[in-house]
Image (tube, rainbow, N blue to C red):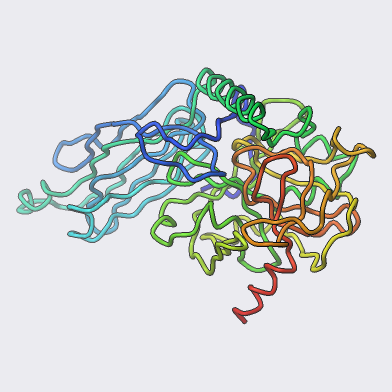
Length: 398
């Protein structure tokens, strides 16, 4: 992973997905998670004794490619890299101890931005004389990839999203985009409202299981992040959750984005279903510390208090919901400060625009520029759990 300043990467049209329950493989997706791509079969073998040392996996137009290893048995000191063809993004993977992978579920690599992943086996010049039978059993087997949607697939998913939301509206339930969509790229506020722009830097895109999306954000100066319980709640799911920082457009209204800084979810520290939050840490915290953090506003906000929500709607590069054509002053604001969530009187409601994938976003007060709620529900009004309630739960950990 590169620590240098990010380069711009072309991504074409932004991802937009339907909030349906079924994934392409027939399994059920949790509500609130957007869909980013799909899992497909692949086959490549890397190894020793004349075997290939490099494999290239490409899906034209895909937003990212993520490689799965059914076997990852290497000689001591040897390792793999998974990179894009220009090696602007490089992830190192060390081998597993013999016997830990065979017969198991395998292991995912970190995704590579773009439509091509190059897997390379790096080996020292060991004398293998007399070890042929042992070495022949070692090596790397790639059995599948997950890859991001292409531009055409993102367009089809966007159409499905709009169709479903229109159907929901005819049944008396409005869509989560309340009125016309007033969200804007985070970078649009770099000059006009630098405080809003700086706060958006602490917000990250989550890629869960290689194909699903939510939003998370740094809370306080330590290695702590918050998202929704309905995004990540099971410790068995945490082995393959990527957290992308600085996934933002380079220009307002453009499609060139900064190459994100990617880290893994490290530990699920605590979670609560009623207040719909999960607190976790990440690996390689030093890489993302520079993007800053958010502070908490521990009070019940006033009705009419103005808000804004930095987020990754449908997994798109960072956007911020500030304006609202459903609020008289034109800025989204607290509609109700005593709104029901999973329990009575846990939430605030608002008409700030959100989409699937925005789950877990921070809701900030314009008055204090601190987080006053954790977004989790759509429905117009949309709603978030009040932070003073979540804070009380977190205090129990001390």
